[in-house]
Each structure stands twice: as C-alpha cells, then as structure tokens.
Image 1 (tube, rainbow, N blue to C red):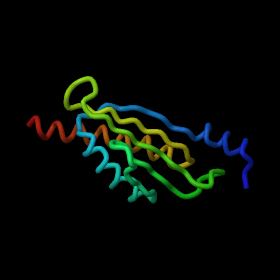
Image 2: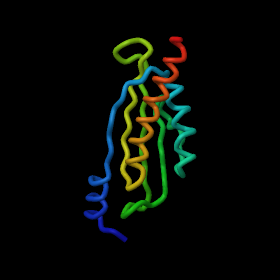
Image 3: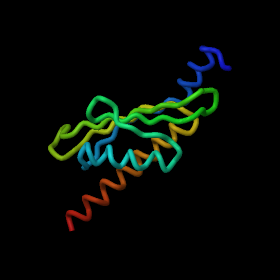
Length: 117
C-alpha cells in the first residue's frame, strides 16, 4: 500500500481540471456524461447538488480508486450557454475527462449546426 505522501504526489501528477463553454443545456450535459463514462468502465451518478455528477472508478496506478466531478452551470455569460467544469485525478480518468470535453464540444457544435440549417 502506498504512503500518504506517495498518494498525494500521484494525485498531483495525474490531476486534470478544465472548463469549457458549450451551447447545450445543463441537463443535456449531465445526460451525455451519464452515458459516456459507463461505456468506458466508470460509474457516473448525479450528486445531491443539482448540476453535479460524480465519476468513480477502480484503482489506477498508485491510487486505490479514482474520482472525478463534472459541474454544469447554465446561462453563464449569454443565455443558452453552459459552463462545464471537470475535475479528476487518475492515470486513465484524467485523459478520459479530456477526451470527454473534446467530444462534448464537438457534440455541441454538431447539434447547433443541425439546428441552424
């Protein structure tokens, strides 16, 4: 079992935090995240706070389990835009969160292009 210092160093090394703005509702973001992460081996459940989703997974690297959080705040800046904040740590979960944000941005652009045409 890893010491507290080793675990803290691993958390810092694998941490991923990022914000993105998309033109989807907060509910759409949560539903997309709830379907995205189970396909990749993680559990994704809403928390008691509205607009928050918790992503949990098994051991990765030195970490005995990994967790991530996705927050979505609607109508930030302009009406119709949603601020999505992701925060995670894990050998695989960090890159998976990065891939999720890229996929979410592409999904948002595709849906808005379909509506515009």
